Structure formats: structure tokens, C-alpha cells
Image (cartoon, rainbow, N blue to C red; front, side, top):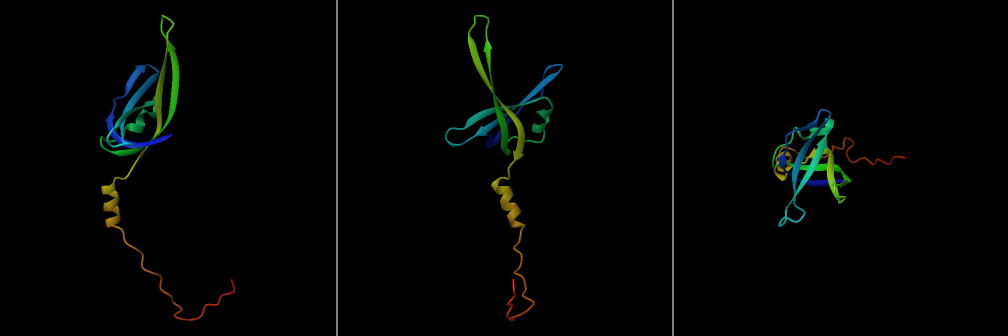
Length: 124
């Protein structure tokens, strides 16, 4: 799955155990701009580095999987947890960046017909 939003917060790497580490990324998701949702994504193990080159305020597309698991407490009551596990982050060009890029671009000139007005009745 993918979602587009703006980087709101980049968490520090959390070394949970000697063999397990994780890191959180909070993305502001504004499908409806009046009600912005703050969605937490998690990267684990070697993927914690996918958040390294991000900056707060940057527009991104997050590719992720949904993980869900039950947990039963000592009283036998079961609670369910969901985790959005990020596996790829794609920076998006902002409108300002695309305007700057297009300002520096130019249109290619039309090709020159080197044969003039000759009738090019080709057999293919």
C-alpha cells in the first residue's frame, strides 16, 4: 500500500533488544485538509536507515505493509495491535520545485525538413 503526505516527525533509532531495533516516522496525511491525520509508520532492523535522508516538511510517498497481532493480558483479555511497516520512502517534488525545474527547461525546436517540398512517396 502507499500513502502520500508530509513528514511531520522523524524518530530516533530505538534499540529494543540486542538483536532488534526500530524507528518511527510520523506523516501528516491530509486527504481532507480540514482534518489532518498523523499516521505513524515504523521501520525495523536494517530498514531503519530509510528515514535517514528525510526532513520535516518534506512531501513523501510511503510504501508500507499492515501488520496486526493479538496480545492477551494476565486476565485473559485480548487486545489487538496494528503496525504500519514502511519498506520504501519516495520523496515527492513539491510544486515549487517543479516550477523551478520547468523554468529551466526549454522546448526542442521543430525538426528541419532537409528535403524541402519534395513528394516523399515512400513504399512503406
